[in-house]
Length: 173
Image 1 (cartoon, rainbow, N blue to C red):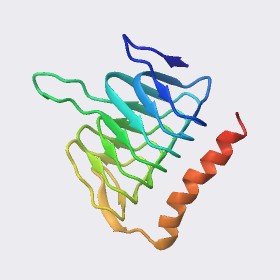
Image 2 (cartoon, helix red, strand yellow):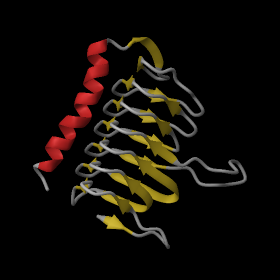
Image 3 (cartoon, rainbow, N blue to C red):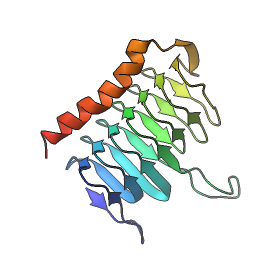
């Protein structure tokens, strides 16, 4: 479902696709060939959410942002780069995600955190508030810690995953 919030309507680029059971609300911009899978929620009611081209938001993922308040004068929009895979039931809240990133199933990325390009966040990992990670690493645990550099095969997989989900969503359109 694509839904307006107050005066903000989601913007979907060509070839983007939202499953009928997913919810996209408010100040949300989906780039070219983005796919949003069953029961995912992208709620841009209190701040902007931008998802870059060729990214995918898998089943049950939740993406929200942080509002402006006395405690946070700017709030935290959520920005997701290009060719990002957001795994099933992951939570992104007021964070910035670079390009060619995989957010594992059930992982949580909190307010003000920055995930740079070419990172894998393992399943169920927690990236705490205001944490900036280093590019090129696999992060696991709660709180998430770098366990090793990504292999060339894993870096290639980041690109493969995005392409795979584009092909998959094309079967639904």
